[in-house]
Image (cartoon, rainbow, N blue to C red; front, side, top):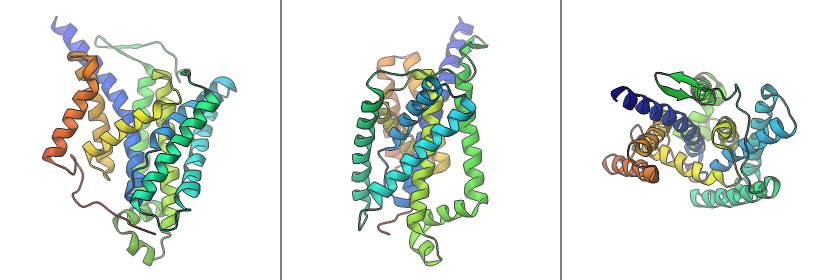
Length: 299
């Protein structure tokens, strides 16, 4: 009996880490844009949805191998992120946080409507990267695609850490996050950094959508809920904190799956939200967030 319970607990934990890895990717995308603009990009979930659906088109419809279709899908969604900045953010004459948020909300509806027009309302499946034969681990079952999800999160964390710490462009983005006005005075083009932040967050969102589609399918309206979970992960870990986004995403995923498995699946969202509210009540800045966050009012 104890072995059976331990196996179930391990199963819930593995599933929670897998789901939480996707939330973490969405949360990181939120934070990249927030650190430069102070705005919440409500179209972030649509990047995830587009990543999955574009990958389905390339991999299933056109039968392009994964090694080529994956970077192609990320590139397509990255272009959408760039267009979002160029067409919705840059035209605003005196951009404020509120105006940018409203612009991203409008863009979210537009992207969702376009996806429904192109792909319809039916959910789409994507073949797993390495088959569907489950792996047995101490009585728990691990889907090979779940290992890809976790692996890509680890790779993303390593690559972004090196990017922000070792490259000139990454350091420029960090400078804009700390003090955009001072960054502008030393020659950094803040508007250009905003464009890069949208492109980078779109690429990360696309990656999340690609790796999760073989597990949970993808449809045109899936992005909204993923955005809510990703933003919750941001708030839990600390808005603006890269480490907090990853930590918050994994915690949200674990709480959901453990609560659904041990108590009731009907309240899995409630458990996560209760923990989130408790943390924010005790520490409003989140688990790893700072009380002072970078702000940019206008460019």
